Image 1: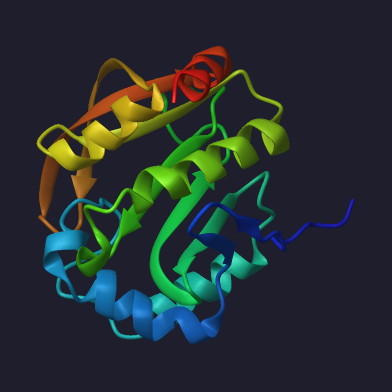
Image 2 (image 1 turned 90 degrees about the vertical axis):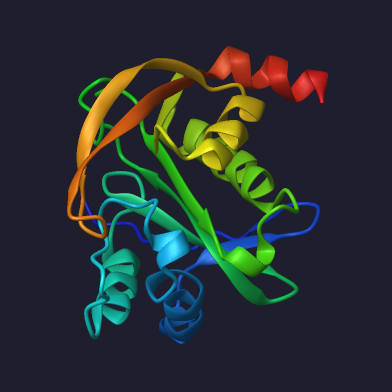
Amino acid sequence: MSRQRLNERIATRRLVLRPLQQADAGAIDTLCVHDFEVLRWMTSLPWPPEDGATADFIAAAADQDPVSGEAAFAVTLGGILIGLVSITAPGDLAEHPDCPTLGYWIGRPFQGFGYAGEAAVAALDWAFAAHGCTAVAARAFTDNAASRKVLARLGFRETGRTTRRSKALGREVENVVLRLERDERRQTEAAQ
């Protein structure tokens, strides 16, 4: 069986989600990797940033099967990269091993306009279709009120707590674990 690559473009009302490209490295560095106020909410990226890590990440994302690995979408507004949304294959969260996991970040100049929720809705729709799953999981640092608010608006419900090592903070961080049932997503969508 040949490995698939992410090649989908998803248009929302204001955004386009598309596969990452090496040309995105500069924007990702500026909006995330070199902005501690964004980076601090993630577990996998170190502070200070490592040279070449963004290019390596983009190359790895382009080479992954989006269903068995990670589907990482550039979130663009008018052709400009403003963030990233990803769906990681089931198994990322021990608390919900049967669920793919949603993750996202939006650069600070673009926060507060609803882009994270809009991008997440598109990624969730992709996840439910691509994985044929009944639920999607997510996690957020307990003190990340903004991300938890986005997830609550989408219909995610807290199912527990876990800790993860944050490379940027250099310590274990408590995370809220959440789950969104497909039926809950439909009900939330109908109410909006």
